Length: 435
Ligand code: GTR
Image (cartoon, rainbow, N blue to C red; front, side, top):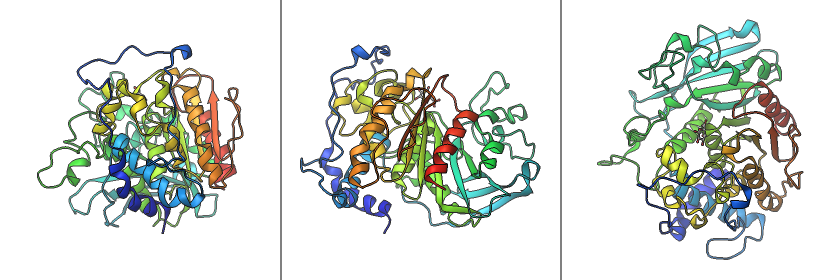
């Protein structure tokens, strides 16, 4: 039995334990206070202990964690943060819609694969763009991640299908009706340096997040959610999936496909994401042990950063700006971080004993780099209990010095972004832990 099954089946048993009452700052009509960037103004906090059960008992052995506490923590994140997602469809009708064995001047084989998201024949599909290096014997290790604006923005190649899904409006590209335009082709290519990654020996797969759920708040009328409503249901319950939950579910669904593709080694798949999609990668990695490695880039609040520090972006702020990202229950912790039964170090602990790399940028204080580092550091007791090792840093490393232990951390100068230099760090880390 995989750890996923173990955790998930046990999670239900614990869900009743920690339903909390709403926090003091819960009034949604109110606006969150202005962001704090001053370390001396961080409120006093105590982190919940990953290794103490909700009933106060201590987690003493690796088995206590893998058979019980892991499921309890996973259940708490489902109930209070990201929401529960439905089981995957059984549908294995994956279709290769486009195949180019000599893509990128022969460097790679490129596929576009249609992955159904339901068991209905007329149900929605996501279109994955998959590159595998031609000069590496299959099956190859892979990075998998969602993209923000459509596969066609990730490379200038004119044969990549223009997305039909909802896209962000963009004045520079002349998009004002949420529909993709040719001018957008390759416009996000700096985020997806395929050639460089392929030359490092890795395949890359990406999917437009809108194929799963468009990134705007419409009370979950569009996207994947309605396909899984029970009869009479019109929106997710307070403990059911928001958009991040849906995106993470989509990544696991993509993994269902990968397990059928002999070009890729399903045992060496890293899930990677930037920013909101970095939050998503962490949650996908926590939920699905098939991901061998997890990379979050500048994922910030609701991702790697500790919420209790309440510096930069806070729970209140994120729930106000993006009410659709998390589950309804998460709003109870607006201005009341200390009431939450979890903090984000426990999300990273859920990935144990698998390697995880948390990346920050000095110019991205909104995402609280120090809180991202501390969260990774505080995941350590679970890694150690499982015999996976510690984090090879006692304090935050200097910029550009990769901490490449099983819990990895990296901070670089510069702003909120992902590009070639970041990908080369991801590859360095994967070279050590996934090759
Ligand atoms: C910001 C948001 C962050 C982060 C970022 C992104 O507006 O406040 O949490 O997710 O967007 O996804 O680029």
